[in-house]
Length: 178
Image (cartoon, rainbow, N blue to C red):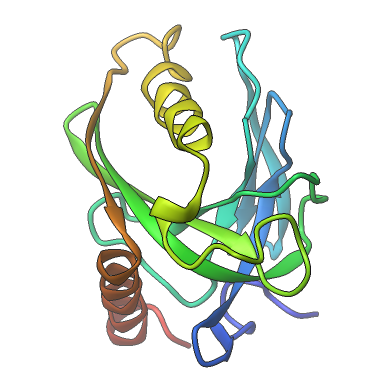
């Protein structure tokens, strides 16, 4: 059985990355991939009446040393994807935040190939409302969880996101590769 965290390569070709979807767009259920069991698990159901505005997941063979998890990715699409599917994506940018005192990052990407976002090469190519909605969501989705506070630190472009993703790939290779 293939483990999507360990066995799936990060890149399928130069600058096309595999994004594993955990949470579909418009869901309030937080699914999380279990590297140990190799399957999707329900982590929790939001008490906050907010849906994920876009598809959410992780990049395989990455490790974010700040939040001690695989690198998060938000896949902007007009469609919602099923948990566990792999979507080839292009990286556009990164949102940096402080999650209750812990540095956290979310890479923003779009599906490759034909889509409503095939023209996008950098986060500045996305409609500003999409970015504003993502930032608002990230600041507010933990609003009813005791002791949780999220502050945005900035939204950066493609080059910063690719550099950070490379660092997360190197971190995985040093400390987590099997």
